[in-house]
Image (cartoon, rainbow, N blue to C red; front, side, top):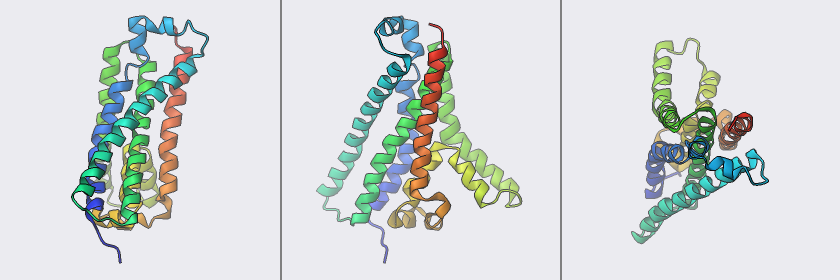
Length: 232
């Protein structure tokens, strides 16, 4: 039988919290990575060294990603220590779900760091970059799901089938993250009320992870291309 333990409840709660906090933090640390240094004049100095622009961008990305990973490990590690200190007993499956939560949270942060770089490579000043970053956060974290829910209510199943809904969910990295953590493990999916979706082969955990990785690579490549073509 599959039961729900305290750790499963923590995974569901932290998944919901992470969707709001990690993307916002990632965008705040990345939105001015390029345009900010251009305004300060430090980008010219940086590019005076024998490095390609894409190497500069990749180095910045790895640095920001490392910072976010450390913060994620410290935050979730503290939660794990608190659970152990309280004598919480959890199954191997529950700990696996918790480990997957930590890894996917770092990957979600990488997605929004890459999106922040893309914004920073396209705009001309830090103020515009900050506004675009906040707008992007609002769109992907709040507005997208509300708009999708309204669309489904209006459609009432007439033209949007299961495959179309899956595709719409995959277009939002926050939804991909949510689906991975709330449907990838039996205990967690039972508590979250998404046990039905967990059986869907079309939205399997490997596919969801692959989509999240694509959400990192595509914006990062686009940011590198835009930065390479940009005049200093």
